[in-house]
Length: 157
Image (cartoon, rainbow, N blue to C red):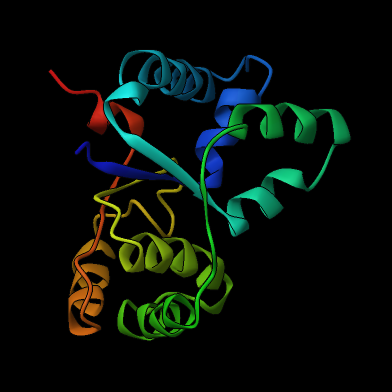
C-alpha cells in the first residue's frame, strides 16, 4: 500500500497559479509541478474540506483552476477528534491563535493516518522550530504525526 500524502492548500495554489516573476515563488512553482509529474502517482493523495474551502476563496478564475487540480482527489472530513487535536497543537506547539487553521491541517493529517503533509507553509507547518512540539503533541494525543515537508523534500532519489 502506498504512503498517504495530505496536500495543504499552498500546494494546490502553486500548481494552479500563473508563473511568477519572483524567483523564489517561481522555483517553488516549478518544484511543485515537478513533484506532481514525477512523484504524485507514488502516493495516495488527499485534500480536506479546509483545503477545498480555502482554494475556493478569492479570484473566481484562480479558484476554478485550483478546483480543477483537486478533481478526483479524496477529501478528508473535519472530525471532532481532529478539532480537539488542533487545539492541543496550538497550545503545545505555542502556535499563535491565527495559526489555528494550520493546526487543523496537521491534526486532520495525523488523525487520518497520513504519512506526509505536503506544504509550502513554513511559517506554522513545515517549520523546524515548531516541528518537535507538533510531533510531541500528536503523540501525546495518541496519533503518529505526519512528516511535515515541502515538495523538494519528498522528491525521492
